Length: 485
Image (cartoon, one colour):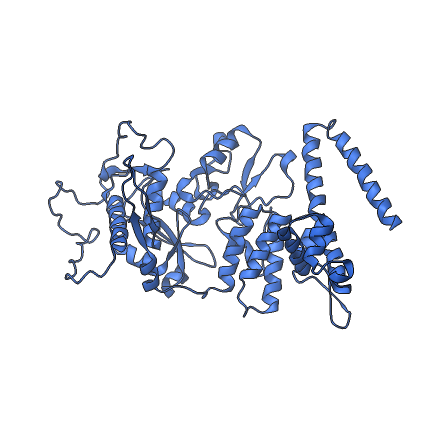
């Protein structure tokens, strides 16, 4: 115990030295100190796991004067019952183990334990990974569990906990794609819009659940009409682009109309199908409200009166792969980041009042770009939505609808506006590039890398996996995941 006490005393002395240095170092060196100190503190729990693993394996709590290990910790360490239980759970999963024969065994989550011991993961990262393991179905074999743990530990070493949680959620879907998927009838039963009674101040509460189609429609409308500064009370309505030139060229092939006069159907603008025969409506009021909500949103998009948003008409943008489209199963991704089941995409494709981008799953090659209007640079922006899906700065979760096109090359010095030189960036990150030393560049996979200033370059991933977690969770064609730049 003398050796242990001496080691702890040395640590206390070193902390005093670091405390003095914190008052004397330059700002740049302070960031370095903070980074190295964080790495050290992240590694401390590994020692705690080792201690608890030996205690729980070699003795019983009553020999230490308590009836449970939780009580041992709450008494000796003065921590809460919840904190004590968490420490025991972490030690069971991340601490060393022994077989019944006494043979040493690696931790249950071996990769996560190694990453934590190296100071790459903190408690928030470990909590995300623990939640993932808890949600894994019982039928998943040990090999798959270990491989999943390896992926999450490697990814988490370069991500913040929020982005790691997104990656873990995607990996869970990829491991168990068939899951407990609800039927269309179950989804329809759960969807509904409820408007509460009017309150004394004249307001009312609206609540409910949206179907995938309704979400795809309304998220793009809200992206434009609920943006900062839009539709301020008492302000004049902003001018709206005419339907025939909304965001682009006139004469796009749409037939002209005099208000409510019927339009002769053409090949490009076919007549609407006849209304089905009336049947007894068995929907609840909330269900009818929801259907009306969806219909109004669809009509608003079809009208062309919503103007443009970030260079595109306010309309639904959807991207999918040829393989999923041919199977008629799986999901497509909207410009708002939501997932749209293939059956809903096929149903929405009938009136063609949205943009559909189809690419090959294996090569990424563009195969089809369907759209309802011809607009300058529209194709490039749709490719950006399909390829990037959102802001490409690592750690940013802004979906594509909220983003602007950014030149990764030095456009001011003669760069080109080619789609391979463009990427999506949210307004705040886009402006940041003009006022800081952050720089963007394309790597060999045509992914956008964000290079921080040298003082902040502390091992974070340079490619944002938030919108494409599947790219670095499961390696394909012999590639090693993840890519951190």
